[in-house]
Length: 533
Image 1: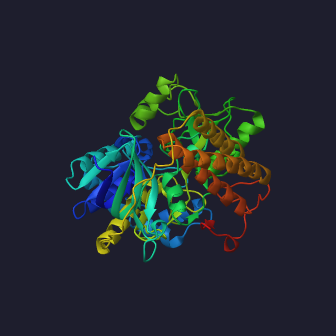
Image 2: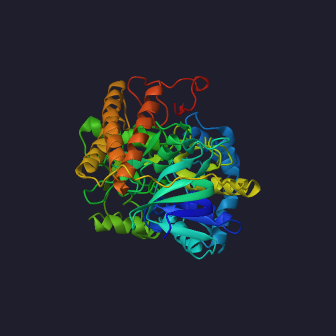
Image 3: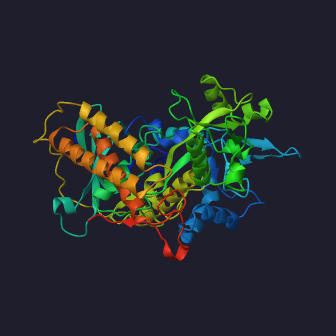
C-alpha cells in the first residue's frame, strides 16, 4: 500500500458528525473517513438519551431556544442557538430517511407517533430516542450506509497525527490545510493523506480526566491538531460532568441516562433522603452543572463515595420497557433498577468548548472544517443542554456539506513531504508514556474538576508543564505510537483547559471556583478565546 493517498474530502472521526457529513457529500465527492479504532467505537454509540428537536405541536422553537440559553448561563451565541434549533427537525427527518428507527407509541385514539421524552433543563418533551440506546441505533444505520457507498473509503485504525498546512512547508499564498498525516496502526506506517477539504469530527477530550463516561477514544485529538495548526479555541474551561454514572469498580463509569430523572428517578442520600430540592427548585430536573455540583457538595460534606439514584417506585414493566439496556447493564453489576436504588457519581462527560468555527463549520484555517464535540460554535455557552450534542453534530454536518458543495476547493499541487522518521528510533521504555498518562488524568481530576480554586489550577499548571516537556522530548526522539500520539494531544488539551479556567474570574455554568464564587453581569463576560502565539 502506498504511503500517499489523495481524496476530495478527508473526514477525521467516525461518529455521528463525521458519518453524516460523509453521506451528505459522497454523491458528489470522493470521501475518506479515518477512524482511530474500528468504525463502531466512537462516542456516538454510547449516547443513551436521544436528540433534542422541536417535533411536537405543543413545543416551539422559541421554547427550545430559551431552554438552551438558560442552560448556557448567559454565554450562548443567540444566532448559533437559533440556527441549530430551527434546523433541528429537518435533520431528524434526514435520519429517519436514512433508516433510523426511533421509538414509537400509540396515543389514546390508537394513532402511532414518535415517543418524546424530557430531560433536565427542557420545558417540554422534545427528546426523540430509540429506547435508551439512541446512539447505537443511529450510528449502526449510518455505519452500514457508509460501508455500502461507492464513493466512501473507510480507513479503520488510522490515527491522525497532525494537519498538513501550507505554512509549515513554506508554500506560497494564504495558509491552508492540505490534508493530514496519520498512523496506520496495523502496518505501523505513517501515511500522507492529501485532501481538498479536511474535516475534524474527532469528538471531545473527557479522557483528560481520571473518571469519565466517554470511551478511550476521547483524547482531544482534533482540538490539539487544530491548535498546533494555528486555529483558535474557546471555552475549554467548561467541561461538563454527567451527574449520574454508575459507581462500580468494574463499570468503567457506565453512564445512567438523564432520561431516568426525566421519567421520575430521584437522587437520594444513603439514608433515603432526597437532597436536590435543597439545591434548586427544579430538583432532579435542574441543568447538569447544578446537579453535578450538588452531588459533589453532598459527597464532600458527608464523606460519601457516591449517592443513590432511585426509580424503583415506578412499575417494573415501565422501567424495563423504557430503559432496557440500562436495566440490563445494572443487573450485570448486581443492581435491580426495579427494586432498589443504584450508586452513582459524577464523571467527565462532554467538552463544551473547542475549535472556533462559524455557522458553516469553517475554522480560521482555509480548507479546514470542524463539526461536533471538538468545536466551539456558540451553541452550548457555559453548559450544554441535555441532548443538544447529537443535534449539533447533525446541523453542522449539514451546514458544512452545503458550504463545501457550493465552494469546492480548487486543485492544489503543493508538494507535500513524506513523514520524516530519519532521526527517531524505537522507544526504549514504554513505561514513560503510561506513567505520564496516569499522572495527567489524575492531576486534572484533582485540581481542575467540578470545584476549582486558584491554588489548584496553579498546581495543575505546574504539573502539566513538566509533563508536556517530558512528552515532547519523548515524541521528538522516538517513533510515534497510538498511546504517544494520544498523550501528546491530551497534554495539549489539558494545558488549554487550565489556561482557560485561569482566565475566567467568575463562577458560571460548569466553571465553579471558590475564589470567584459570584457570576459577573452578562455584559462583562464572554467566551474565553485563546489564539496560538
